[in-house]
Amino acid sequence: MTTTDIAKAGGSLAISPDQLGWTDEQAAVLRQTGIDNDVTNAELASFLHLCQRTQLDPFSRQIYLIGRWDNRQKRKVFTPQTGIDGYRVIAHRVIAETRHTFGYEDTLWCDSNGQWRDVWLSASAPAAAKVTVLRNGQRFSAVALYREYVQTDRNDNPTRMWASMGANQIAKCAEALALRKAFPHDLAGVYTAEEMAQADNPSAEERHLRKVQPGQGDPWATPAPGRDFLTEAETASDVEAVRQIWGEAKQAGMPDPVLNGIVEIGKLKAAPEAEPAAEPEPESDHEGVVDGEVLSPEDDYADAVAQLRAAAEAAHLEDFDNGVAGALGMPLADAPVEAIRALTAQIRPAA
Image 1 (cartoon, rainbow, N blue to C red):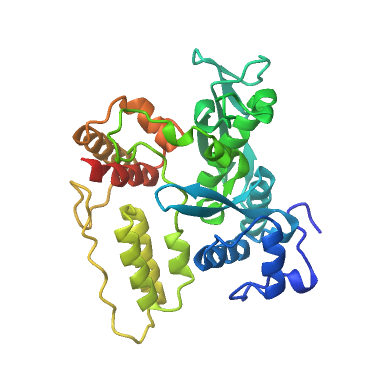
Image 2 (image 1 turned 180 degrees about the vertical axis):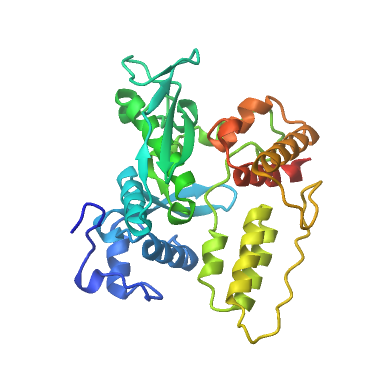
């Protein structure tokens, strides 16, 4: 076994690539890991698909489902999680298969005055950490702010791990963000335990970046991990299923790159001898986007930022720079266009 392989459960617990559901024995073991009767069939099916796609083994605790109460849905919602080691193994496996180059730049930590350091010696926690992943000559940088990820107790003090190893914890969050940018398909839909730790904070739902009226959600809040529509389209059985996924993605407010990607997948799934299937009309909600228009990366980024700023102004959101950085988990300058457009779609209904 090479260093990029992950040991998998054998015997009756082994997950096969073509498995359509959990066996009775697998389900029994899963429930011993903390999955209770509140989990839905859809969450279990999605978790199986994710285990198959990432090749992480839930029975060796490489990936697991964590349930957290969701006030909006009035039930416990289960989210897949792994550790940073799981992310690293997936990245190395992809690199071995694609024969790309892969590496890291030095991890950087930032103090409260905005000064970056390549080693953190202070007893207090850093304000942020930055990790840059190098894949096939491309740089993928991500910044994680300590205040956005720190796990706290009921007195709003950092938990023991975050208090004693804050620099290490926030660096793991930044590394997870950078790896997910470098390997978006392979790591989509699964988050690390360090990233999700703050979701367990007792006061998490009371945090707002601006004053919110009763009954109104915070438009700057980072959305919970949702469906991986592109992967669903790729694994769909036929064009009709892809078309249905496109409609659901549109209803969920997915940005144009995701919608267009689903359309392209639908074209590939169409039989050569079949009549061309009618593509769903994009019906783009983004102002200033012309059908067939091809933008350079710089123009596309500038257009996305302009639309986000216009949506924020229309929604009367305050503290634009800090709000965007908190919602994206990184400075606006480091954010990919898809993430900017997704945030624009999220806050636009508030306008």
